[in-house]
Image (cartoon, rainbow, N blue to C red; front, side):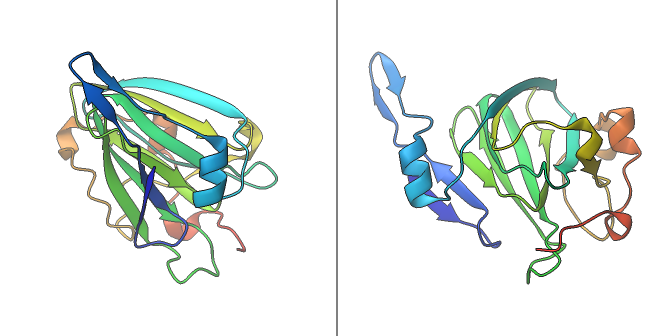
Length: 183
């Protein structure tokens, strides 16, 4: 696995080593030992998968303590723009975001540590999205930030008139009103 640093500390892109021949390909999609040696010591306890269609924007989501979550995300089929927003008040990158294109083709993974909001936009006809979480989903601790917050300046790469959001995601507060982390 090759680790690629981003503009925000602890948020990294992982590129697997892919072995291909006339039969197809093989790659190790996850190794707990390698992940802990190269990225961070954490144990993932829950895997999730979603299927979405072009224009769907999911996010920006996060959970409050004691149920904060780190996520390791990837796309099995299709392509998404994946986004992490730094919510750690003591961080020099507080309020900044990093985005990466994830696809079934590039097989990249994106690690979003605790203290970040996370979201993605589907850029292909459809996408199958998988993610590992290091804490369980706790609805009472779930929070969100508006995906279109002008202070965040996220270019979702989906035309405004083509965006599809849940009612809940349309009602999230703006970044300035959101609960953030004292990290």
